[in-house]
Image (tube, one colour):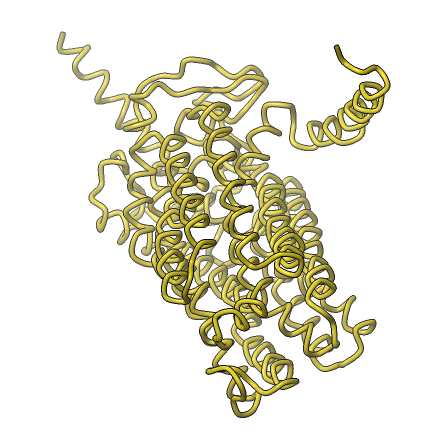
Length: 527
């Protein structure tokens, strides 16, 4: 029999959560079902982010336990991302043809097992091998998540939706810093790996039970019920839905972005208009087509440069704060959460502003917001890296993190805008390949530059003399601001080509739909 004294506070807490947390979030995203989808996809992104942040959060204990230096710590992050360079594209092709939710469950389970194995590592070599296995799962999840997002939500709202999802990813960064850093301080670095691995297994089970496959095409979106695809539809893009969403547009209806492009009579690139189902294209033919879209190439490079800087910052932020400001492991981990919170604020603001600009006829609003975010981050990092005062540096770090986080939802939504919906998986594979290449390079490169400027090694192999890490790391962070600012310049260039490439994607959707209907009508007519 339940204890009424204990039950009352639990009931009160549940009512408070429902009234003051859950309902406002449902209103923000458009309903309970949509909130469930956003939260689950955000959790997928947050697991990978938490893992990479964990390596940075436990960098100091790892260096002591395994007698390694900054470069070796960087390789631990590189190992998981470098694998993605080779396997993301094949998984992108699978995302365009297979049941995506089953694929996602399998990859998250594999990720979790690799994390648990990493926690049992007895040497640096064993830990490095576990990171390689983990990278395969991460590479699979990236294109699957992007493809699902495009089919769950309509074009005019994707900037805002991506901002909520990326806020979840950045919460993963904050959790990685806070939880893992403090676990390392209280127990050991192994505990941080085990906790994340267990969380991943729970998430895989929840997605398997709660997240059905949506109809492909990107125009249905979510209403108050789920537009669920049959197994045939999930696998090859055909078939029918088992449930029509209430309140969502029909497949023939035009979304707001499409209406605005057509109202301006923007001409498509006729040579790039597809007239057959892209799902049937061979992989390398699809890749060549994807790379022929100028805006997409520019967006992908700019986004990858942003992730390049963020990877270096995420890996060495706590080491830098410990040395520069004289903090212990627990306090540095806790204060580093401010970077994650700043990025969350930036993501939420940028996604909202970008969608509002589109609603007010500024079609290049997403690209412009992302460019402004990169320029803001570059400018704010300068004073924060040139001072030894934590009180002075903290607000600038917060603003810089907001700029880094703010660029992502706008760029992610813009990438879907300029690409045919049946190419989203492979297009994300192309994007992720470059992203993984640059983020794989970033940690060891930041570590190498830091060690070069940090003085001669002392003590452990590859280690720097006490007090020299901060000197080397601030030089590394300053030098790498150059590609970050260049990313902003690239996005200004993309603003000139974006609208026409959106028109081309719209024309391709219409042409392939006419081709599909003609194929279905042909046999019926002959019969």
